[in-house]
Length: 155
Length: 155
DNA sequence: ACAATATTGTTGACTAAGTCAACTAATTAT
DNA sequence: ATAATTAGTTGACTTAGTCAACAATATTGT
Image (cartoon, rainbow over all chains, first blue to last red; front, side, top):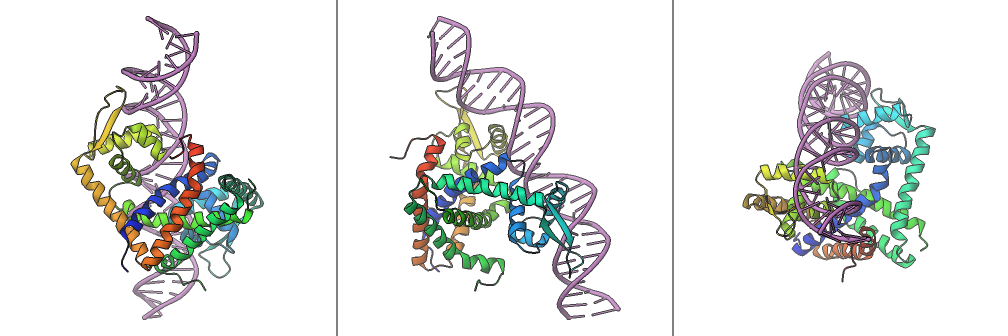
């Protein structure tokens, strides 16, 4: 498909802009005693069912040795626990401990709060506009995402 | 301003999604012999006029000691050079050497190529739609950006 | 004018983040 | 059965980033 060069430049400008936004929003995590990676792991374990290390690895696109160490540390901190996966003796299922769940909730509401603050400068109508644009972007880009990662198309 | 909670959730979903996109697009830089930070510095020096370290520091929101070391290394590599700023004896103006400019062009066209590939799966109409959504997002979010950073509003 | 304060950039010393290769044990494919 | 993959761990290492102290200038308040 022929590509419009000025689109390329506009997208790159957006990327620089949005990288900064993401940096701002992550700030609270960077100031907390948990790393961005740990926060994301808590999220992945929270939303997934019977999550295994390899699932997190794929979701986060993170090195398995690094992940292994992070999980070990989080286990030591009492945030997560593992139990043997029922039909694969190599793997564990990872779940949040009550304490880990508590931390997740704390970090999660801090994240909500950050986004909340960002939105609070917009009228409710503009807020909806904004999210409509975002959803449209996801819709436009989602397909080739899956092409690249080799996963099936969404139903 | 009252905030719509489902907007908050949609924005966070967008953020996770777009973080992955940015990761994909940065991949070529990570595979090159230059770091993301160096690539961004080359960009900042390229687009700015009479750039000083503190300008880069502000643009990238990066620690000054870290930046100092990066610049030193890039100078050693022959990518950039410094000359005393005319009206501030503490500061230097930083500029690209011919070689640094060459590297910038190389990295820059690789970045263009990445975005190009992303877009190539869309019809030209969809490409324009996509960038319209992005521009709209920037427009909606740009003001509070400036409020936070204490800079003046754009004219 | 000039003392206090702030800014620009550098350095030392350190911690955190991430990578790479080798390895064990279990699983799947041929 | 055995070869090839996959799940996860470990050792050894490199790269990224932080923090505090510092010297040299600039700016500000009186």
